Image 1 (cartoon, rainbow, N blue to C red):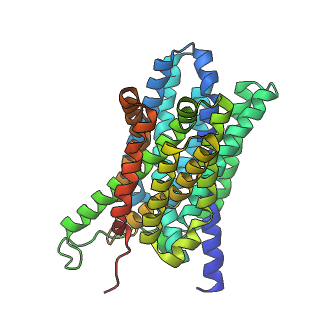
Image 2 (image 1 turned 90 degrees about the vertical axis):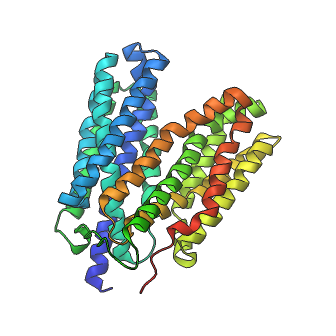
Length: 393
């Protein structure tokens, strides 16, 4: 890699990271303001649940639309356009005072989320390809930081008595500034890496079309299982500590913090591991570590040990999803539509997984219900070979 190519790749990496940061800022702000939205609209918990469901449906639709947009315009333009739409779409649902208006605005926000998700992950695959070494996990680490920063800034605004309207406008402005930085890096020129790959010939003797579809399906299954586990940990770790171990609300929050912190740290370190061990080992051993973490969580008699289990789960999970997204983006003849399907299936798991665990918890108890994500990670360990890169001819 020449010095000029290295500088361009670094610039592209920073620009794509800015898009990931924007998404994190917006979603962190949205999540932190949900109680205020509920209060302002006088909505019930079930009504707010419907709003979140509409946002999720919008995101799934946006992901499918984004696949076609990336094929036509390139991932860079779609990623930047989606991030700008995110900044503008954040404002209306947090400004309106009626449930119906908030829900309609949440649909628009969901569409922007879906378009950005696929665009930025497709762009990240291209930048990673140019780097010729794993860097995907670091992008997701930047997203995690953005989510935390968004939530903390919202908390600071609440503590300082800043009005919701002013705080939201300030955050949208910050997101637009970050988008501007991303646009300067990604839209300066169209590079060969931004050109969508040509579809593979149906008669490709090395990897026939039916096998290609089968591998894409398996990658979608892996994304579903991994993000089911992640969503379950995000939504149930605190309550599990309270119900199963008798922890207080504040102590239960430590369990969630243990998981999130370990995952964030892992995302910034796992790329070097992947470069040395390969994606299959990262997924396999990460899944094994996650299984061990869940075993510790379900068997721990005290909160400190349980928190260690949640941290193990976060560390094990941290590098798994990036390997799946990278494998999808690098399939021979892969298109953005394949990536949009895998990302969409994974996002569906984030929505459905915690609900499934909740339904099981009503029947067998929350501690026993965590066997579901444990089994999901065991399956991922067995199917880790799916993310193996294509062998050269």
